[in-house]
Length: 205
Image: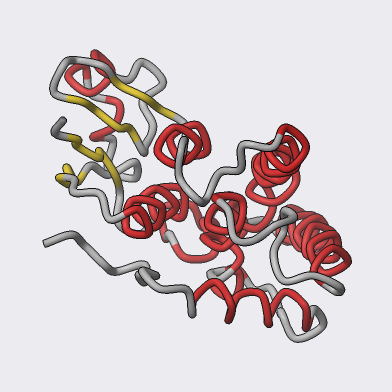
């Protein structure tokens, strides 16, 4: 079945999906759309994704799926990157909820405020300091887990590692220093060394 990925190339949330698709060896078509220029909020795009955000996975039978972590879970179902064991599966979900609730709102948002000129007015010192503290706290949680194991969830690499990798490996663009978190740095190297790994700028074909 043909799959289209509506996405913005420099978005970490979209990179998660490309990373999972690459590790699974799945073919897909990219449709570039930009959240910064308003094109995700057009009537045409909202007709297929009322939330007006990316990424969005669209199938040729008319089905669509939004939310990066939901897409990752769907794609990985039945693969080696999503365990069948209920406990290990729950631990994967635990990290995906952590990513969206504690990690992404600090690390991804601070990066966005730092790199996109149109958001510069929102990057007040107070807000940036608050995001820095929250992001460092999320990194501390990851470092504590990775201090004595290779992967976030037990049993080997999963979509949890891919989804957390996306914005963690870009954290420096938001002003985060990973040097105080050696377990996180080593984990980033492990993820990037996996067969099938692709970088942020990778595109299929």
